[in-house]
Image 1 (tube, rainbow, N blue to C red):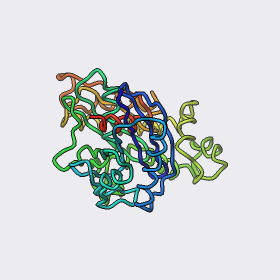
Image 2 (cartoon, helix red, strand yellow):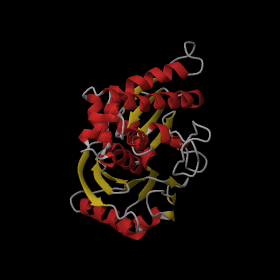
Image 3 (cartoon, rainbow, N blue to C red):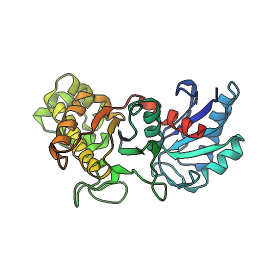
Image 4 (cartoon, helix red, strand yellow):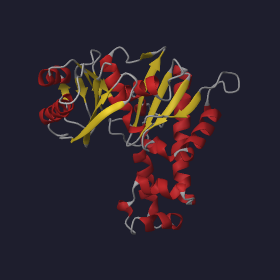
Length: 312
């Protein structure tokens, strides 16, 4: 059975795992992410791979990185939260590991993992919407990962939904992730909490300090029935549903999978997302309706998907 290694590279950690042909993670390791030093980042990835190769016979390595990857799946054009700029990552990692390497955008890798082994295993088309710090996406059409002419397709979080809206880290105004992400939820609550009687219970959880409010606190309060927290989580769900309706009008996928940390709120996000989708979908009532599902692989999706892409 061919084993490959998948590596999920983020701003704070590097997760690497040996994955078999069934999508099962046989063993995994973690390393701290030296995000400000590109060369140390490559060395940390190579170290994790070498560690796993001591105990497993591995055929190839797939790397999922949060950034824009070129069409050849070789160079990181830019990674906003890492130090890579026009970085020949594949060549460097192949030199360090002596293994074939494929480099892919992390959300694309996650979409492929969900398509093969998770929420999209029974369809030919899948749009993955990952909702965490920002909003990411990956798209599979007719059984193939869609990457676009230059390799940077499906950056759906930077679809503009509000003209002259909130400033986004990409430099634009009014991007979807400024309204439908974990950061958007946290920013809104922190802006409103101080001096708001409705947010008193939530503020109490944070010891009275607005800046100590976390996304996990908001979600936990919503799950326990706190009316204010529920309202704010529902707002994120509605923004997600409206954005998915716009994407459905353009892409017409069979299914959309919601993943990422915010999606872990479950029905608190899913129900308002589905309602908003149905209310804003063009041609509603006269066209087949896609299914919005929860992603199934959790944080492992990118690692599993990258490993499978390397195998192929």
